[in-house]
Length: 441
Ligand SMILES: Nc1ncnc2c1ncn2[C@@H]1O[C@H](COP(=O)(O)OP(=O)(O)O)[C@@H](O)[C@H]1O
Ligand SMILES: [Mg+2]
Image 1 (tube, rainbow, N blue to C red):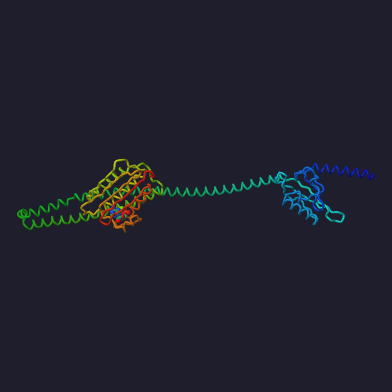
Image 2: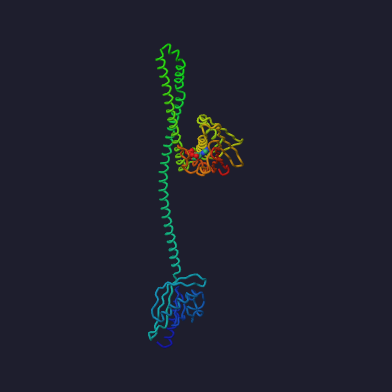
């Protein structure tokens, strides 16, 4: 083959190779030992955002690529030149002309000259941006899935906990219901017991004591007549006998009635404790009623309930109710408990022997406020005692529980009200002051 035809064949081959590398979608380039591009295919030129190979030839990656990306690629090139070691399938990124991140799978092969020195770098880069994006979205999906799984696990734990708590609550609720029923039954039994004690008391009061006493008086008065009829000895014996019976009967009666009164006290005490327990149970169940309650009715109900003990001690109860309606939302039973406690305290504070024995209840409205006062002229209390009255369990009575005022205050406060008690001093009576705010209530 002649020289020219060899040249021609070489030119054809080179043109064919050139067409081949230009039509491949992968980036293909050749660099010299200074890292300067001497061949760049269409894909390479396009990936740099340029339009002609002449804009690329003679330039290193430092000039062709931005900042740190350019530095990284140039460093790799220089390493290959100095070590003669290729870089195979390295995943690396750069930013295209639009600033979008692109990923290449790069292979750079060193080419040695006749002396064995690396004189060129042959590079090929396959665009793997789509794959990377897929991988990225898969990774994100995976992250999201694992965080959702974590959340689900947490939710599941919470649900389990909630279930356990609900079960515990249900058990507690059951216990409270049973407790509440038991308290109710004991309460009913006590009411019956108290009624019997009262009956015994009445029988004792009405009993034949008077008859026996009258009989012995009669026999004493008629001693002369009886002595004539029966003889002095027998008449005297009869008198002694009837006097003895009357005396024993009087002593027995006194003892009976003291015992019965003591039993009544104990019953009242137990009832008070029961009420407190009931309130506790109801509180735990969160069952405070919130229905319209007429305070006037409460006062008159309490008055009827205490009528017997008021009459017994000859205490006068005056009610001074201003015109208007006195309705609040609340729990009828609990509010009655408050007023009964307060009135009972007043009754207990009033001395049997006092000349004036009065309890005054007053009810009036002031704007949205309702003011309920209970004033007595009983024995009152000192400022030192006054400071301790709301302590749970504080009492000055031998048979007191010290729970009355404590409960009164907590019941009134649960009705958005205020409860206070004051006394001008010992022997100067006491006044309870209850204020409800209809707006807050
Ligand atoms: N109207 C009142 N007059 C004088 N002292 C009172 C009055 N009300 C309550 N107290 C005093 O407050 C104390 C506590 O009352 P309370 O809590 O009802 O318990 P208790 O009646 O069982 O003693 C009583 O022991 C008494 O000393
Ligand atoms: Mg009391």
